[in-house]
Amino acid sequence: REELIKKAKGKTKSGLSPEQEPYYNKLKELFEDKKEDKELKNLAIEVHKSIEEQVSPIRDWTSKTDFKRSLNANLKILLLKKKIPLGDASMLVGYFSALAENQYG
Image: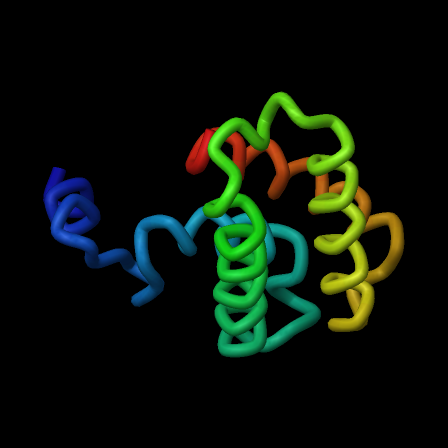
């Protein structure tokens, strides 16, 4: 209960914003034993920022197939540049895209 109250006030266990934390949680689930926590937090922040910058200007982006395809491609490139293996990057793109629709749709 207290964790929910903290989250509502903008505080999370990880120290990230409530919008960034789901990205971090998924990355941590996959790479907890392979990458440092700080690196995962920074990647979560970068992924969230990238998504937010791309989708914020477009109100009905969830119904635009070409835009979603471009968003997914940009996300995959971002993850691959951060040395995320291709298989994991593809899976994460699907997860992050669904999360973005939930947050910004």
